[in-house]
Image 1 (tube, helix red, strand yellow):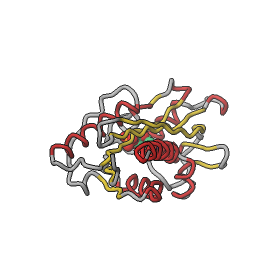
Image 2 (cartoon, rainbow, N blue to C red):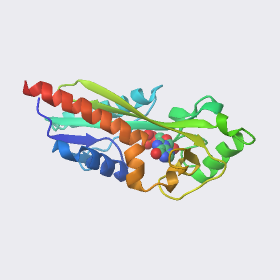
Image 3 (tube, protein in one colour):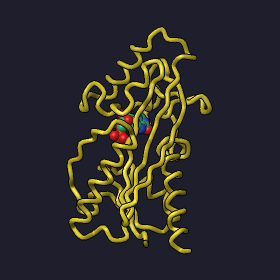
Image 4 (cartoon, helix red, strand yellow):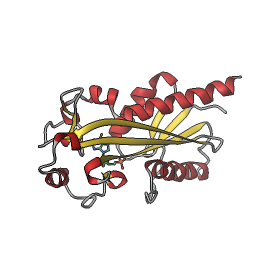
Length: 211
Ligand code: IMP
């Protein structure tokens, strides 16, 4: 089985750029599903990050197969979310949909801060979680997971990143992920860690093929 191309099942150009950077030394072409000519609405109705990522990868792999384009191609996708321990791991897999998909993060973040009002620092622990799922040309499936631990701050800080970054404080850095540069964040983020783990799995598969 040869792997020459990775199609990343996302509409987010930033994610494609990030995965291109991390997987650059594998010498494969990394393109978005849009660049591969695939447009498909996928309902993420799984109950874990891994399930949701697999649902996306399988759907795009099926479209590529139908178009006769699956040869030597790995389809990959991710699913991620924020888990706040004090809120019983909410918003979790519902992070994008929390308070409604179209609600601004100003409002979502303000809401989470108010739900933690008066909660002491030691109980404000949280983490970003990311799962990556890959469907290989022979139909095999791989998943990996990455995590970054932190705490929910007391106010929004920083303007980099997106989503819940302004309220996610990382003690090692003494700032929120919205105050890190893109490069710094990629080195330590849940998505960066999950991608590195997936890279190791893919390298293992490729080595296996050579012997
Ligand atoms: P999805 O995996 O693209 O569906 O995104 C899940 C949701 O989790 C995002 O819409 C954000 O609300 C949240 N999220 C995931 N990763 C991050 C991050 O790195 N920073 C801020 N929010 C994130």
